[in-house]
Image (tube, rainbow, N blue to C red; front, side):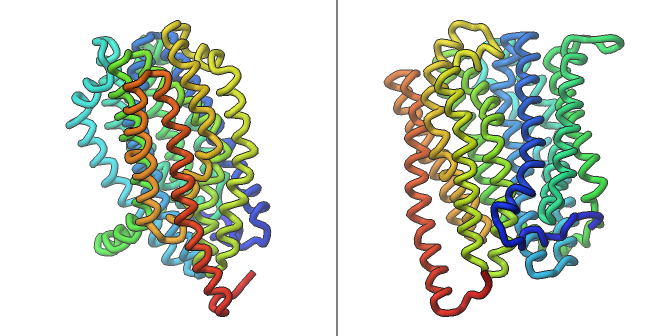
Length: 452
């Protein structure tokens, strides 16, 4: 491969904290720029049309599905490559990367076909007004059929991160976001030689930014694709390792869509509030999501070497750092929810719905750290069934039913479902984590494990 900076050696450094501090900041910076783009994008669309904001909220689950399938597949590639790096087999790591690139093209074809086949009924269930529906269809077709850029960029980034190269993915994310931010007002409102394209302009700007990021990562991560038979063999291993992340991300999409369906019975503004929350969440969750990205290859690398204490230490140090940084989000959601919502809309109804919603959701941020990290931990050590179970349990078994039951009482109370869910899943995750650690301790006591 033309590229991993350290071929995984960075994950062998003695201090876990130092590894996290080396690898996480570039990802944090990239995600900060990306989150700022999400906010700016919604800001410009909100200036153009209130229906446009509802349209973005309606299509948001589809964007999450695309991103989730891409990142989940990339995570499987990342884990397998990091495992091979841990064993010193760089050739197999490169072969895995090549197979991953082939998978990206098939994934794009699949997503494009799904978009064409199912976008209309999906939008009909999420947006009620004719204006919001038309805009959602326009935006959805462009970002769905034009998703090749984000799919390839996600795979390329995971390939580079498996070897310890966090800087190029960071540069790609920043470049893509900047392209997006610059093109948004130009294409939405029409400037200079460019006509006013409205919501279509926002979608085109999004796709352009994704292809810009794809090019930057692809220059370094592109590697020869192996023979078709070998791609098929490696695909099975990649998806076995990656499907918990795909399940988690896709269920994330499903449960947001289901919440949208529930909220649509109240009003379009309720759907808008949920969409605005997830836009802002991406900003406040930056430290956690960056650390989550770093945790997977670190744990996988050390698990391959049977350095189990380093696996658990990575988990808890990442959780502790995340908890400290997450307090910023808790404070903002508890004390200035109205100001956050007012960035995007001055609708009194949206504010009336959003202020209590944000305050309830903000209380869920701290338990969310462990409820999200436990599936990541189990995925990194190859316990894919446990990881997938925790994701399904969190998003479908807990959140959606609890949200629906509470919504029958009142809309304001329904948002408490976020807090209840994160606490339940943290408890279940801990109940599964403790026996795993005990098993490792027994191996250590028998002398079956070596290393620090």
